[in-house]
Image 1 (cartoon, rainbow, N blue to C red):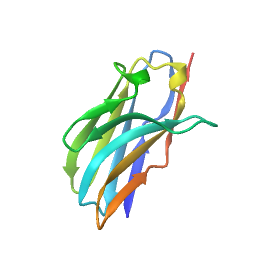
Image 2: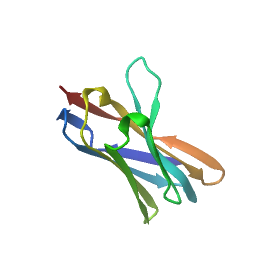
Image 3: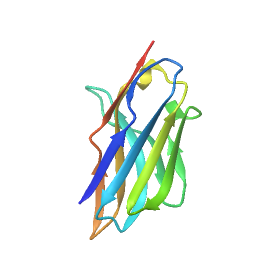
Length: 121
């Protein structure tokens, strides 16, 4: 079983910054990719940013130039991914979810519990 724990959400004014963190642990042989998604009530969950095991990144057009995803190598079997969010806008308000996929005894994909980000105008 793979557990993801997120932290770092909160309330910030437009133009401000927040940093989200996610720690993945448990039965993990290999991480293929870790990423951040977000979801507004009544809307579909959407990709914000993803980083692969070889360091390639991909961003939603709406956050390019403002958000940066990064990762740490596994330490004591804990995999870390961060999302630095700058120049935040009210439309960035959502619940942000961490995702990890990879291999343990087979293939896995796991989600965190979500962290609320609220940007006030």
